Amino acid sequence: MAAQPLIVDLRRDSAADGPGIRTVVFFKGCPLRCSFCHNPEAQDARPEIAFSRDKCIECALCQDACPQHVIDLANPARISRDRCRRCGTCAAACAGGALRLIGASYEPEELARLVLRDLPFFRHSGGGVTLSGGEPTMFPDYVEALLRLLKAEGVHVILETCGFFDYDVFAQKILPWLDGIFFDLKFADPAEHRKHTGQDNRMILANLRRLLADGGVEVLPRAPLIPGVTATPENLRGLAALLRELGAARVELLPYNPLGLDMYAALGKDMPTLPESFPKPEDFDALCRTFRELIETHR
Ligand code: SF4
Ligand code: SF4
Image (tube, rainbow, N blue to C red; front, side, top):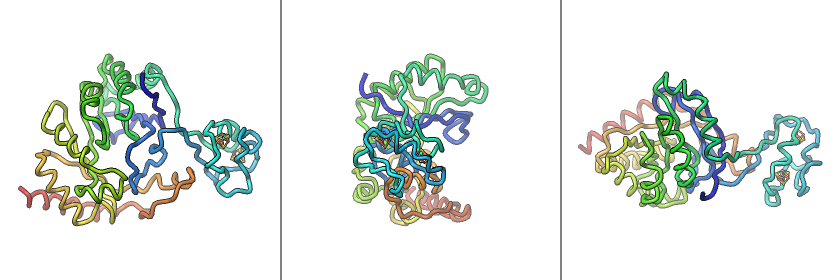
């Protein structure tokens, strides 16, 4: 078994991550570093400590418990992270719930057991499991082992992916078990992609092209509309032309979601400069209309 991933969270009863009632498994670790990421706790594959200042009752139990002596109540950030070993001792000792260890390790059998508790809801609603993150494809052996267990119970499985993976490994280990793929499409232009995600988009686009051409599993490209970043006239034009050229039958546009930005501060990371409010429904509708017109223009 290759590297065992950490799991950020299991979200039960989701109605927004595919058909029916779904349980979403969030993997920790992503090959991209999107400037607009709203799951910053899922970027780093290693455990992390989140600190919520508003919950701290200043009991100093964390300071006493830390074996590295890197916690100081006088430090506004609380932890000197460059010397933190990510052991989680402080979070276990925290009386106020202000410190939280992010990233839990499960054997595939254990994770499958947790997820399969929801099997009656999946069967009743036509739902299933959605693998998200982070990027589940970073852990192909683990995901294969998990999916074998879920598919043995007939669970419907969707993968949410950024598309940055080795296609041959993916096709061998993960693809055969999937019922659907939600494929993130952020930028058409390679330079813009690299600037805002840290990676080139050539492999991503090649993977999307192959998946759409193979047609073995339903693939839904999804484009997040981030004000001033992905939702620019140039990028919308580029994405519309690309989707047309790839022959994608459908695309989903995702409205900007500022939830999660607080997590940057909790993890001691720089806060991105992004709007802190949700877009107005009429603005999102206008962007969708523009995008539809652009796709029609390319027909
Ligand atoms: S994770 Fe461990 S090393 Fe880091 S601050 Fe907490 S107790 Fe100290
Ligand atoms: S243990 Fe938790 S509540 Fe107590 S001082 Fe540390 S962070 Fe604050």
